[in-house]
Length: 236
Length: 236
DNA sequence: CATTCACGTTGACATGGGTCAATGCGGCGG
DNA sequence: CCGCCGCATTGACCCATGTCAACGTGAATG
Image (tube, rainbow over all chains, first blue to last red; front, side):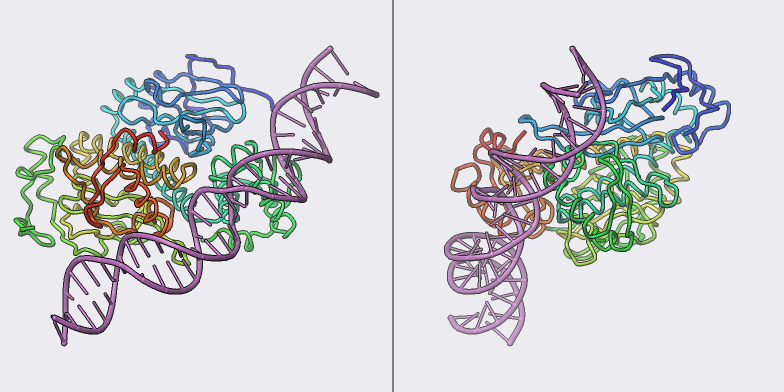
């Protein structure tokens, strides 16, 4: 994986040539506004396994993920963890409730994110309502995903959860036909996302492999071998 | 319960004298904008047990609940249901993903809601960004609640779920000291909200009553008898 | 090349909460 | 006032998934 990105924390950013602009919040902006956005943007890299933000912390920044994968999660005091989402390039991280982050975010792979100071972004939104519009629409997407996840966590069986997870991820990534899907997170992360244990995730994947629904070329990739059957197994 | 509300579907609405204005999206508006908002608002009543909106339906309207309680939920094809929230006066119902509703909403009690045509509201937002701002902040709240619920569904025990539910509801309602909390939904609704069965909810409430944490004067009210203990039992 | 270590898989067993069934109870219609 | 009906409660039993433990495997390290 060669790294073209050379900016580090606080460096200038070139929004006009950003690969994810069409899908991120920046996509809505005309060139002038884009320039202003670039002026308040910084780039931030985080190594796999390190934290980007922490729940409860003062929410100073909002990020758009540009490279890699991020997991967002909440913890109970005794350490039980619920991963509430895996973020991919184009996703927005750090929407806050009040002025504190409502979740922690940790890099699954090495990541690069575009950082905006919350205050600057709010100020820019005043002049460019289409930016706020875009944010609202993003929030709507997140809400839809959260609702779907609640249905999964509250009412689906282990098998259905794993099937839904694989299909959901495959739908967000754009994969070539027959190309194996990367699964950069480990089994523990999947378990904490699906409200299961590592063992149950592992067993379920094995069952699906034996049933010919998926192939597992290695621990960090899956191929969906029988889409129809996996859909049927997903419960919806 | 005597009904002062006399408007029905599509009737004129008097936003200036609305009791929930301070907490709803209308709260942000200056008198002029409020007049415009009132002009596009209609009132809608729904009887307990009837539907307000249906998942997948074209999302023509957005509602602010003004009286009563509403449950929002998603269904699996085989009928399993996950209630993703109970709405109380001031809450916004009908945020959509694309242009379809992402959940169904059914009245728990008789309700009154303030209806806005989506299109009109969007148009009004163009002139009054503070309205969109308010919407975004609401969406942030919803997202925070959804995250908390995912943690509950994925990682908490039955006991913790019920305790969290009672505390969460008590926190949103403003109750007088020692006043019993109304619980207008039935046990099945609570179960479908918490990812449990009716029997488990019932048993858990009984246990909590026997442990002196709560009192159950009747099926549709609870009193929190030992707040500290209930908090301890909630897992966070 | 040997060792270690983190992660994943598999097996045996335990258990929280689900399922099924009986009973209780309060409101409503006749 | 009685009987019915929908909801809630309670009990007995069961099973999907969790827990605990052993073992495999591949990548990193010396």
